[in-house]
Image (cartoon, rainbow, N blue to C red; front, side, top):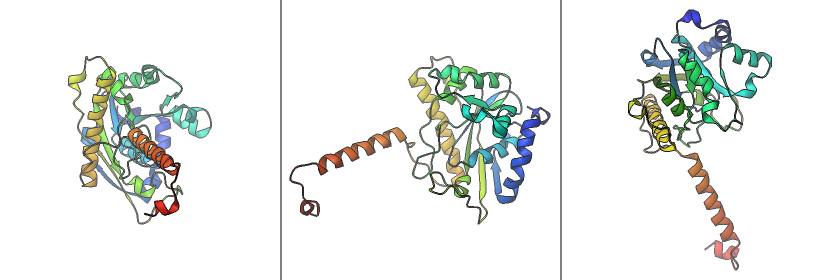
Length: 263
């Protein structure tokens, strides 16, 4: 998609958002040659800060191919933010929908029109203690199999240093000046999955391959080895619940005393 098709609302959003990003942050952008010049495609991006959508959008905008984000439907309802969301062609996600194909139909339509749709496959900010990508959800995989569009893995790092996720105080830490690092990689090879029935097993395999590509690029950006397995938040919560239950049972054990616990 050429720049003259970006549109008024996206340009307005850029006029508002770009100056503070340019002034307040340094940039290290790599891999922009992997962003397709024509045709619809998907980007799969890791998520580690409330600020990183701006960092990634800045990178993507400067490639000449603006992203259409999937966002909560409530953001589209009214006011200036709603006008920006609607005007820039972002895609509302209705969380109450139980039909994944229906929920992502707008994304499929956008890709078929030749646009870029950006997914955060983790579905939320990473809970990994070391801020590596978590195990992904299968939405991006489902859309990739429906459209056969290129899936471009994108890793970003640095926004989390300015605005750490889950910090008690959501304050920007601007000094010393942080570097927003964004790097795109070559398309993920999913050819072997095309034509297969999108079973839970197939969707999981596609998702894991996409997330492995994102994680590998992030390891390059961070210049450190990634964990052998992605963090699984559900398993971690289940394990924590199990430990809590064991502690409660131990505390209720008859005859337990403070003296016993001190031994």
